[in-house]
Image (tube, rainbow, N blue to C red; front, side, top):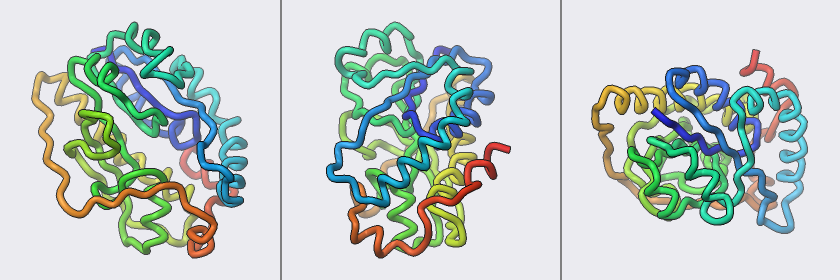
Length: 238
């Protein structure tokens, strides 16, 4: 099966790729990533500091992107669409990709597009779902593997969810990384079902939908705990 992975150039995406790549080794993988500056201006100081920390972590993860031949693709719906289309995907998997996919992209793949969202849907749609769940003192965080059927954000039917106890003694960054082991296992299971010519079952999103955007200064002031700590990444990559 031709599988095209759409990621972002950040440490969590690199970690997810390191987990998922070996699980999909029997398939032809093509990997693209977005590398865009944030549209939020001005950036709250904590987000600036988090971005600097993540750039330092990326220096030790570049080999992951190189191993899978990852290429930058910032305009998948426009100027870069041809590069994406040439991969002739049977399935598209999105993880942390920073472009909203339009119909020309969604309709390319035989088995469609599935997205691993780093939050429990529909309660935590949008960005930095783990931050908002921790700020709201949720006892569990997790991932939602769902189909992308249109350009609406995080609204597609659910394939599988993973739930992980929130570690309030750890940083936000640590908790983000901690959800990807189970999330990537759910992706691998869905791919195996498709490879076995089985239909991947889904269920509608039930409950109240809450969409979250980037936190502001007041949100960070109310967040109980560090955003990141030295050694967070090493715990997962060793």
